[in-house]
Image 1 (cartoon, rainbow, N blue to C red):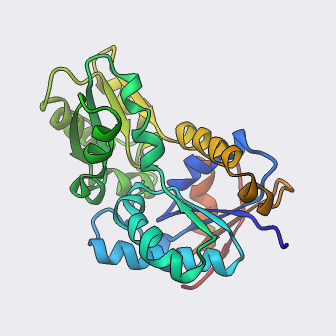
Image 2 (image 1 turned 60 degrees about the vertical axis):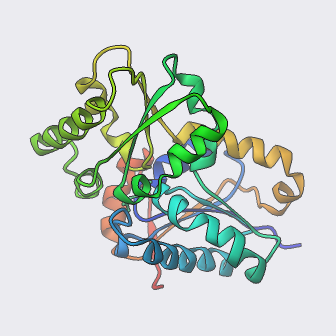
Image 3 (image 1 turned 45 degrees about the vertical axis):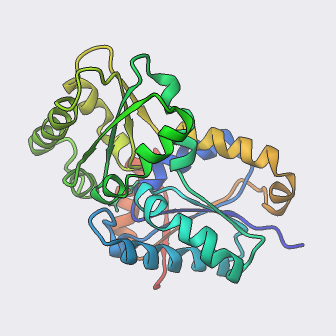
Amino acid sequence: MKKTAIGVFDSGYGGLTVLKEIVKQLPDYDYIYLGDNARAPYGPRSFETVYQYTLQCVEWFFAQGCELVILACNTASAKALRNIQQKDLPKLDAHKRVLGVIRPSTEIIGNFSTTGAIGILGTTGTVLSDSYPIEIHKFFPNSKVYQQACPMWVPLIENAEYNSPGANYFVKKYLDQLMGQSADIDTILLACTHYPLLIEKIKQQLPAGIQVVSQGEIVAKSLVQYLDNHPDMSKMCSKTGSIQFFTTDSTSDFDNHASLFFGRELRSEHIFL
Ligand code: DGL
């Protein structure tokens, strides 16, 4: 049996915020990260486009031999995961697994809130899919979920403008729109893997007492649990502690930006899809 790395995918850099937490909790495993930077952002794209792009990336991971792929992207998890799991996996390889970031987040987010009023900040695609309200209500039927799309945040982050005065304007704009929906919101989930880079600005703009939750640690804990519950999958995964990074766009751009998301210098390789 050939053992292989765990695949971690995002449209761009955001998934690195998740990979960083996964590596903290599961340092022995090997990982392959792919950022589809050439086609990012995914947030404003149609359901069909996000599905086709994500499927292509998943097939690339499978061609590298990955048995387990994490979609560390909410937009891809919202728009492509179900189709891939239900339609494509049985045809491609019924033993392989593709997991997303929405389920692990929605099954615990209600525990953070005392009022039951939860705010979701995400890309336009994630918000329009209604995946968060639908899933949160399954686990926390009495909760009230308020959503706000933040279409300017990913471009600000991808262009390293998240510390600029322009970023202050757009952080305040979307937070005001979210908080204007209910005075009861006491918990806000950053439902886009790029947004942790804005977390300090977001906290500064919010009244005290509102919790801002990012997904990296939640997804990492859930993967630990998943591998504990699926020892066969864990056995298929190689464990030499290596990480390889791939991008569909410029490697120098990727390497220059990626350390901000991942917390250390890295070297990527280029692939065409
Ligand atoms: N990081 C991705 C997410 O979690 C989306 C960024 C994009 O729009 O490509 O939704």
